[in-house]
Amino acid sequence: MRKVFAVLAWLAVAAAGIFLAVQLSFLARVWWWRDHNPSDTAFMQARMEQLRAKDPKAKLQHLWVAYDRIAPSLKRAVVVAEDAKFSDHEGFDWEAIEKAREKNRQKGRIVAGGSTISQQLAKNLFLSGERSALRKGQEALITVMIEQVMSKRRILEIYLNMIEWGDGVFGAEAAARHYYGISAAALGAEQSARLAAIVPNPRFYDRNRNTGYLARRTQTILARMPAAELP
Image (cartoon, rainbow, N blue to C red; front, top):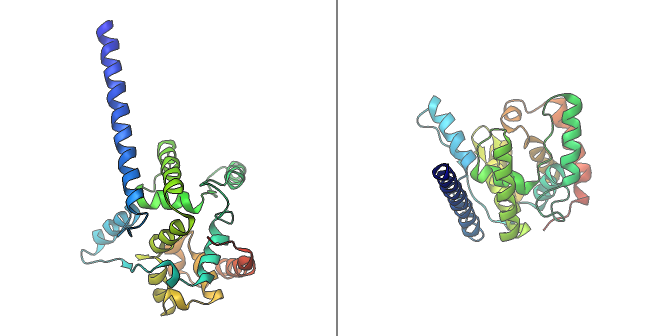
């Protein structure tokens, strides 16, 4: 019996050591990206694999631009659309999470998420798109790391540069060129609102750019943009 307990104790220590090593590896990369730009994300790598399964020569559209070279209107549009309390919370919007949970309960399926920009960034940088309690737990830990290590301005800068905005289109600069043929710095208010409306389902709206919902959502975001608080 003592040997069994000894083995179990050893396994517990080993598991704890592996867990700690994984978390430290995440923290080290978050710390590095505080002042170094990531070249890609786990989500971008997964998308590239999908595209190259169909076309071995496929490439992503992506070009990093500094925070000051992204139109303020796009920053405002994305904040009001994705995370209105971004500047105030510490990584989690508990009210939004509770509202999403209640909405999902009523619908009997997942129709809302309630994730903040920081949570979305954690997922995109490091994790897969699967839905599980384990993945959500890891996402929460990385979100805490991001919020503790990076400024809100830096979080938003990386987010705007790395999220998906179309079929193989990543980041604000590539999105502005893909949809409007201009730079991210030149985006107007309505163009920015439309890009923000695309974020939740970018590949669908890349193929379906004139839906009634997208038009209505664009106008809603446009009306709310003046109230956005930016870091």
